[in-house]
Image 1: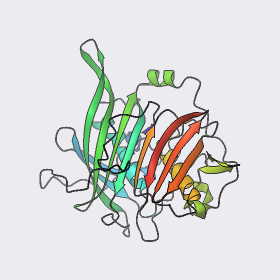
Image 2: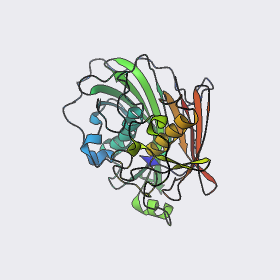
Image 3: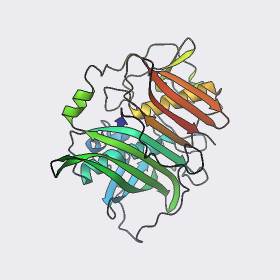
Image 4: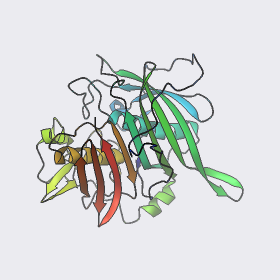
Length: 328
């Protein structure tokens, strides 16, 4: 799913505690016992998760498990080139976001009769990670099980007939073995080619070249400058990828900045503004208010207070996305 353009969905999951990144407490989901084992021997079709590189496909199996419920298997690689494990062998939290994104594309295409030509747009996403329960990277890949619930299905109506699914919300519980360690949720819209083209008239500039002064990679929580997506312009930070053809962030090519690239830009900006104190977010919430274009580069406004970093992206004087990252 890519970042969308409508205003924030009022149905974003309630936090309940005043923390804008908190999801409901993790607990063992109640599903029928002894389901059939999920296949972990090969990945799903890359086209069904909108990836060009097979190496970036995380899902290996997705099966229905009741009305609008699914079980899925994902393999999180130990040596992901963009988001390597930390020194303590924990995976990057963006593996949660990317797994949610792939499920949000695969399930509608494979199980909900959404055409393959459909464009997927994120309205909002959130996740919360239990650092005491999360898996560490073994010698191979971490085998993750996902319990998925789909709801708030929206359709077009032509007279009295349904003419297609136009949006949904999804919640995913992540388990390592039988132990829950994370929960994520998000909302998305689906547009056919005609509607998308009307929406994108006059937009869609190519990804700009990666010019511009950059902070040291270590200040952004990176090992390589090629993974930087922010640049310094006076007192401002801009969305400006060092590698416009980045193998993960821009793997499948989009005519606007993808949601995952926005989140990574926000993470890098907060890492820099906090002097390297806030690097690995354990929870997040982001709402896409409209498309963030590749050009001119979007400005990142962010602040860091305590264990929380807030961010928003501005382009042409308009806020395009905003959110919160929370740290341990």
